[in-house]
Image (cartoon, rainbow, N blue to C red):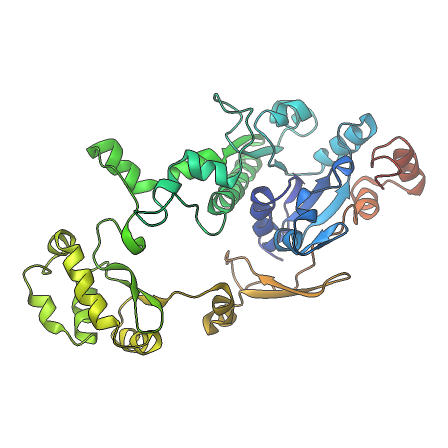
Length: 402
């Protein structure tokens, strides 16, 4: 059995952050049942361009493999009854909606504890369920602006920039998954569930880590650095070679000594301007010019060969295609494939979460409402007559939505 095979999660999730968090729980064997609103056409991620057809998209496939889908209108009285029956058979209700919406939908612990005292209600929202911005929508880009990330990203003389991937969304998904698992553990131990009030804002602020500590404690003003250089460790940044860019990192003194030897300039190790971390920090610009002159004489791969042999932390600056083609990517089983009726073979990146051997039997992302009948039969015992009655009552949306 997979590690989380005994956990069932009802996921009222959409787009990126929430589905990303539950993706890793499903990867570990949790039964993640997407409760998709038929009036909205299900998860909005189904329609994200450019690779979208009908109610399927490669964006949706990236966040929803190994899950199941029920089309259910929880605002409809009959749909609500079905949802409440499902809560009786679940370990957690997981959502990523605006901070005030869980109360409106009645999916907080106080709303559901009479059905299942051990239910864990995990909400991942932009700003949390409390605070002055709880009713505001929050997306990755917005949170990167609020949390100061964009003031730290990009060139010092350029405009503020966001990170390439949506790291607030994805980090928030990881935080929500961790919170949910901790909640289920406590609920099984103590017999009482709870709310998990997780927010992208909290996540983004917490990831400021040591620059925030420096600012709060020593009045340090973080800022953008040239070539994405580390604010204090030197050298630790991107450098231009003859045909491209590479990353060189010297977070320990031993790496500095190995670096200058590998570059053929061992005399720099004894130069009083560069003898220690403090010296190199004070003379950063001079050192950068000297290293640029040396590194610019050879190609990236030539330098990487020398630096790897010397065990100096280094890397090429790959594009996405090159990253996917890296031999280490395949060796670590980081590419998985599923078969899709519209897109054929879909290759995508795997979860980095490792608990024992990585699973290999992945299911494609579900189509909208694909598992409604099977799940309501197996979990709740609804026969065809019951399903027909619920359908007529609008539990699964109107006829045009089905």
